[in-house]
Image 1: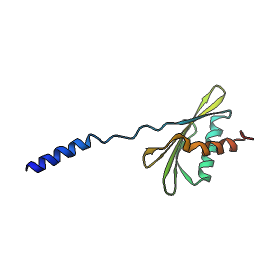
Image 2: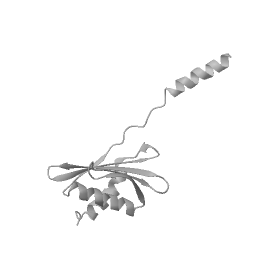
Image 3: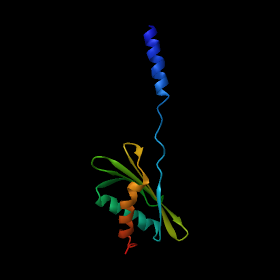
Image 4: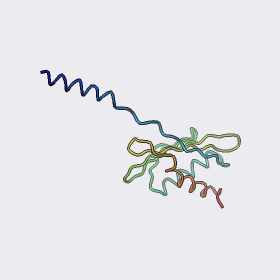
Length: 119
C-alpha cells in the first residue's frame, strides 16, 4: 500500500511539471496593398504550396491553413489596415508547438513577389 502512495505522489508531482508551449512569435510585415487583396493572394499562395485552408474570413482579416501532408505545419495569417497599408502578421506551428518566425520568410517573400512588390 505504501508503494502505491509513493507512486501516486510522484505522478502528481510530475503532472505539475507539464506546461503548455509558449505562444508563437509572429512575423510581421507592412505591405502597401489592401488587406482583402493581401489575404486573397496569401490564400492562393498557400493552396499552391499544398496547404488546405481551414478557416478564412475576409471581414475579420484572418486565415488558417494546414499542410495536407507530413510534417503537418499550420500557418495563421492576420491582416489589419494600418494608415493606408496592410500589416500582415503570420505564425506557424507543427504538432501544436510554435515554430521560429524565420520559417515564414520564404512564404512572405513569395507573397511579396505575388503582389508585385519585388523587382
